[in-house]
Length: 487
Image (cartoon, rainbow, N blue to C red; front, side):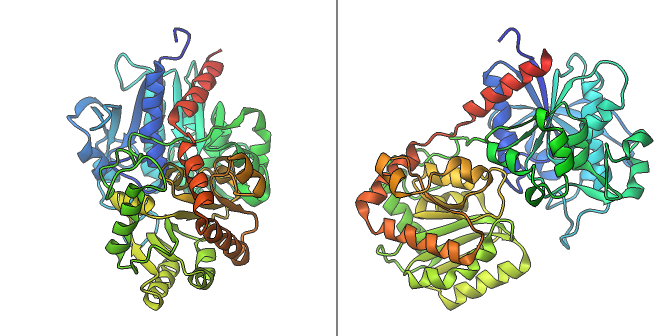
C-alpha cells in the first residue's frame, strides 16, 4: 500500500444511518470504511443538516469559512460516525442547513429555493479543503464527489490555479441533475467561461450534475451496465453527448452491500435469524410479517414485497397494473414506500379492495424494511432504469428472490431462472425485458410456478444466498482507480 494515495475526501449530502433518502446514503456509509481497510486515510465531508449534525459527536471546530453563499456563519467541524468511527468533516451553516425533514425539498415537496447555494457551499468547501485550506495538516490526494449535490467540487477546483487533487465523480442517478435557472450562476463565484456548453450550461440552465461530468478527472457509475446505458439518449437525460466525449474517463463499478447490517444470520430486527432458505427461521419471519400487516395467515400463498420509492422510474405503475394478475395467482403483496401521491393512493385503494392479500405502509422505516425483506418470498424491483439498485442485493442475501427488469445494476446482479440457469445452478431470481404490465405479470406467474416446486425453490434460494456483493470488490476497484489517477 506504500504507493497508494493515503488521503481521500468523499463529498456527499447524506449518510446512513443519520440521514437517508435512498441508496446514496448506504454507499457513503459503507464505501469509505472499506477503503480505509485498504490503508487509505478517508474522511467524508457532509452538510450540517440537523439529522447529521445531531448524530455526530463530539464535534471539534476546525475553521471558520464564512460568510459564504448568503450564510453569515459557516464553520467546519470534525467528528466521527457513531458506529463505524468513520472520520467526518461537518460543514455547519445554520442559515442554509438548519431545516428539518427531507434535505432537498420543503414541506410541499418542492426543492428548497436556495438549493443552489446550499450545495454550491458543499462543493466550494470541498475545493477549499482540496487546495490545502481549512483542515490544518490534512490535504486530500483524491476528492471523490457523489451525485449532483457535490458536483461543483471539481468545477471550483478547476477554476483554481496551481496543483490540485485528482477528482472522481460518481453518478448515482443521472435523472436527478440539480438544475437551476441560469440567473443563479452569478451567485456561484465561478469564472464566466464555465457557463457554456462545455461547462455548467444545460439548455439555458445551470446543471450541477454536468459540472461533475465536465470537470472531474474520472467519472464512475454504480454498475457496469448503467455505464453503458447512459451513452444512449433513452438513459442519459439529455447528457449523452458529454457522456460520449468522456467515455475514456468513465467506468462502472458495482455497488456493494454492508453485510454487517444486512445479514439474516445476525439481524436484530427480524423475527428469527436464519442462515439458509427454506428454513424454520425464514418461515418464522414470513409468519410474523403476515401477522404484522394483517394478511391472511396462509402458508400456501407466495408472499411478494416492494420496498421502494414510489415512482414510474421504479416501475411501480407496472406493479399496480399487474395487481389483478397477482391476486389471480393467489399470492400476497406487502409494500413499503412513499413518493408519487397518485401511486400512494392507488396502492392504498388496492389494499382496501384486497385486505387479506395486499398490505401497504406509506413512508419509510429502516427496521421494518429488514422485517419485510426477511419475511417475503420475492422482492419486486421492476425499474424502468436502475443505476445499481440495492434492494435486490438485500433480497439475495435474505433468500428473498429478486424479480427485476433486466436493466442497469439489476442486470448485473440477478441471474434469471431460465431452464439453462436452473440446470447449472446459477439462477438467483427472475428477470424480464419489456417495461409492460404484461411482461411483469408473466414473470410473476413464472415466480409463483417456481415457488410451488419446493426443490426448485430451495435451489434458487441457496444460489441467491451464496451470491456475494460485499464492498470489498468495489473498494478494490476504487483503490486501483485512485492509483491510476496518481500516476
